Image (cartoon, rainbow, N blue to C red; front, side, top):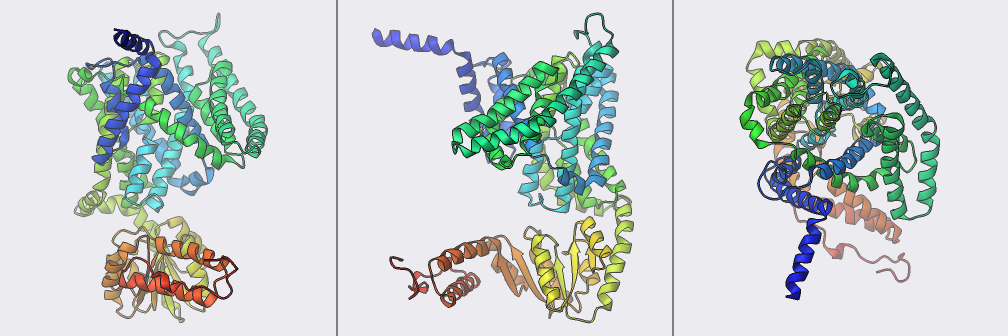
Length: 616
């Protein structure tokens, strides 16, 4: 009897703790469905949104507290926007500003105009159509980075353009969050200052925002870095993490309370201020676990808003939202990239990578709901469109090569999309090819001019060899050409580019890009064009060695192997091993990679006479 009473008491106490039960249910459902999504090679965000649907008020079974979930989601919004501000680097944007800035602005305008035309025709107000279109114009940072990393394209020129494009969209989102309260001045349910006109209210709001930004940057840029450094000197990880949390949440909430700004804007500015500190990297590392946890709750809370019956009751509205996200946005991106003089491959990367909506779309949508700028149906459209587009996006991105091949089968369309780029590069490559033809010294072709390529180039030129650079970053090629260097823009896997670079008379081809797709094909093409050329290839994994050597590579350098060798060499040298023994050990290890056993035998490392006493 006592046990029954205790059980009933415990059950009653849990039932009276809606915060704990909502958090527990949200995390558990997100964990299970996130694992399933990951197993299906979909974004975990799909699982998190479905978890929200599962524990939401519109589905049978357990229902979480929507109001509490929304408050927890605000913390998720703060930490997400804090992370954006913390990682915002102006140099990343400036590197691709010529395409990212006009591209993001142009695509956002086209998506917004399309949404306004479609949704006003379906009964939405003009303001609702504008806000809904702006929310749909923004892509998910998480999803874009994930698909780029899965295809090893994050550090390619195509990936740089897509990421720069996304940075501009993030900035536009921040500006939109500033403007939403101003749009709401005359909206139903919005209040204006007593006796004041809507124009006066907008003026006061703008003045408050200016004062807030000045205070945060002028005062915060002095106080915050000093505070973080002082706390870091205490060598307490708990206090440092707490300081980061206080700065992100307190500045965001304080900005909202004192100046009427959104917490998202305050958090973004807080992140930018913290980024000026010398310990900003540690701040980012400490904020990451919290951001992940509350971001999950944010996505779950958004999923709780979706009524599955809406998909059946209003299929045309959902289809209209998907049309904007999956058709208008990608087509607009393709056209703008082509007009900016970038290749079709870059256009497809941007178009497919941004054919989705995510976290910032929800932030904009929730702000619009709070200010009565959008009906509940608008949020239903956003959530449904996000679920479908995020699910499809990895599948679409895996088909990038298929889409490009399809465009090539339509020569008129491919030439049209590639026309400005072809004109832009033709003269540049003609100059580079002429310089190669005029060279008389031994010629080495270097594919890729990143940090590794620059080192190789400098050392070979010091050794009295002529070098020609092939790179997919046209800004890099233009810079090299201006300095009088031989450089060509293009994909080194294409035979035509290799021929322009002088492969017929080259003594060496050095591939410094580890993530090149069809690396073995590149080696085969080079050997077909010049059977005497020595091809030296860089790759990430030891497992790639056999295939590259079979294709004709003279030697292969492995990132993971050389990193291990460098670390081991430092340890052996510090332990006093003779230089000759160390070099023999390293040579033996490299030899085993060519013959494919995993690691060198222990017998290779013999004790040295110079080892300090007590050394093993």
